[in-house]
Length: 106
Image (cartoon, rainbow, N blue to C red; front, side, top):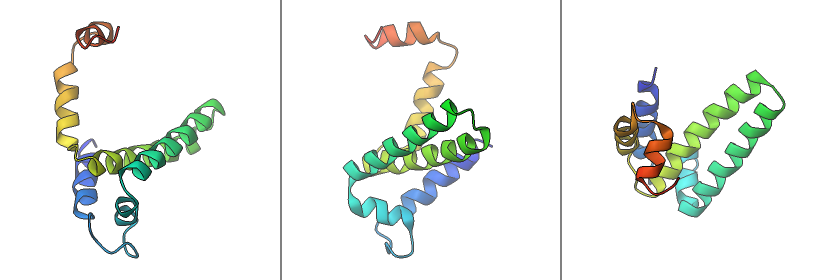
């Protein structure tokens, strides 16, 4: 199941520079990294609202939107999905408290 995110990340990356009329991702990229980040934030807020309203169906849909727009945002700033996965693997099995302390974010 997690492979769907890797496939999506590759598809999104391939959409850079494509026709904005044919690709929503291309349209977002054309608006620039700041707008991509802004759109991610909007989707995150919508997911928070769905969670607060205890609406599982809407939360599922909004969570998918959040993941999609997160991949757009990362790509717009040149951050590879594989690098994010690598960071998660690095943290695997480490207490969140310990991991944050290691980055000086206690």
